[in-house]
Every structure is written in C-alpha cells, then in structure tokens.
Length: 423
Image (tube, rainbow, N blue to C red):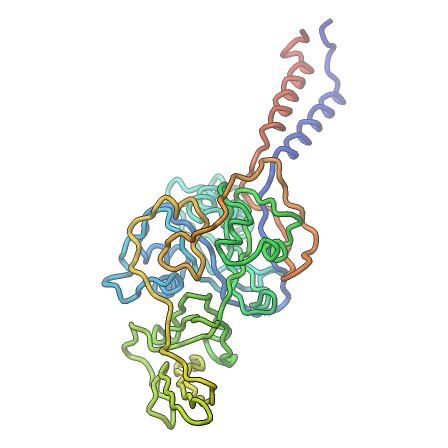
C-alpha cells in the first residue's frame, strides 16, 4: 500500500535521526590547549610542511618572523650567500619559532596575519596555506567574519595558531613545545620514537586516554631544551633553545645553541657586524671564550658567558670554577646548507627530531601505519606531565560505515515524502 500523507511529526523524527547519524559520522580532529591566567609568554614551535616552493623570506613573512631566526631554528647556515632569497622546496618540514601568549584564557599565538588573495577561502587558507595548524572556524571567529563566503582581496586576517608552554618543562626538565599536525601515516609510537620521548609522555602531555590519533589532530610535542636565566629586563628573557638547535638574539649579534648535556652556549653570530662590546669586563676573554689551567687540585676553568640583551647592550658574565678535569673543545651542533630537494621519506615520515640534524632518517624506528578509522581519542585528566585538554579543529573524517547508514536514512526519508514508493 502507498504511504499516506507524511505528518509534521514524521518529518521531525526522520530529520532528527539523520542529524544524529551525521554527527556520529564526523570525527573532528583535536588540538591540545593549555589554559592560562597570566600575561607571561614563552618560546614555542610549529611543525610546518611547505604547501609550495617558497623563498625563505616568503615563508618568514607568512608567519611574520625574522628569516634569520627561522633558519637558525632549523640549524640552516645563515652565512650562506643570499640565504633569504633561497627557494625552499614544497613538502619540506620545518620548525617555525613563535611567541606563545595567553589570549582569552588559553595559550595561542596571534602575531600572524594573512593578506587574502583572489580565490582565497577560509578553508584553503587554514588547510593548505597553514597546513591544518588552524581551522576555518577559528579564523572566522578571530576576525568576526559573518559571511565566510565573501572575502575581500587584500583583507588582513588574524591567524590564531596553536601553542603551549607548560612552564617550559617536561617531567621537571627544560623543554620547548612544538605543535605537530598528525598525518595519516603517523602513529603515536612512531612520533614518540622520532622525537626521543615516550608514548606515555605524549599521552600525558596531550591528555590522551589511549594511543589512538587521527589525521589532522594537533599534538603538543615536548622537545628537550636548554633554558636561559636572563633577567626579566632582557628582551630575550626566558630564551629556550631545543637540543641540537640554535637561536639568534641580540639584534643578530649573538648565536646560542643547546649543546651536549643540555648546556646553553652563546657566541658571536656569523652575521654580527655593528654590535655592542662582547668582551667580559676585567678580562681579555670574548663572549664564548673558555680558558683552562691544570693544577694539582683540578682544572681551573674560566669562561665568558652571555647574560641577555638589556636596553641594546649585550650583557656578558665572567665565571670561574674548579673542575675535576679539564673540558675538551666546545662542540656546537652542525649546520646544513639550505635544502633544495625533499626526499620521499622526508615527506611521509614524521619530521626530524632536534637531535637528528641534516634530515637523514633514524634507524630502528617502528614503521608507521594508518590508524583505524574507527579509533577515537578519549580525554581524561592527564596522569603524568603537563595537563592538556582538547578542542575541536576544522577538518573532518567520515567513517565509511556510518556513511552507509546515512545513505539508508536518506532513502527512508524519500519514501516518507512519497518520492520513492515502498517496494
């Protein structure tokens, strides 16, 4: 028999079922956030994959950062000829240094602005240009955009980017946190191994109830670092450098690295031209110099260290100590020439860790597999490490099985409205 005229109640029931099925089908990537209540900021990193070939200066402008600071953060030789015009290849993974602030009660970076171009959409800006580090909805909210389908060419948009500080520590040791966008080939164990941490640590930092992660999730990854103890009056107060990495400071005059033993070592930068004095007072030692003198009691070590950049002046500190044995020559992390190509393993594997310089793959890593489409992230309070939480991102993943249920629901809906008669 043909179905009678559908009632309002039948429409409501069918629409409700379809809505519930659609909501169940959408798995929204998560992003770890850190609540905050003060005005302190910290150094943080973004894990970013170039969406196209870009000059160093173009990439730096995309995030409103200093090109030399960008290169130093990735241990790339800043003395390379015309380095700011060097073209970086598409799909290259780099660490983007940012300042992480407290905005509206959560940690984020709001220093990045984007000028819209013809044919731009919020989704394209979020997913392609900024590699999923931000969502279209977050850009819309940050800029109070009422109609996202209408963007004026040349419009200046605030791009809120994810970051965390967690007091600059991980398990009570100095750390700097990198926001990392999960890719389909990633597993939590593979990411942990690549960045020399543990699955348990990543679960604690990101408040994960299990090790399941999804494409598009944004994880906070703690990288061991060297912390400074500069005075608050210094413009580079709270400077933190990840192991094996560099940071340029004091108007390009000083280059600091995180050496073996998590020791912050600073010396004149290769670009230093017109800089204030870097000589330690009451000494002929320059910044970074170390002298040793063997004695019957041990080894007298005198060094000229860096104490921060205060009111345009490079502060140097002279220190002496008696050590059991004399230290060997100072060893700093190696730097590499600006990359020109990206090998396939650099595209598919998680990015190199701070200790893995030069981009060569590490041996013995567990292979990455695509996580199950039915996995989910459970988020109880973290048992160990910093306390993270989760918010929804922009991209969506649809469970194919539930998509089938949606199709069935649509057919039933059409039957109700007598477009498709019962068989």
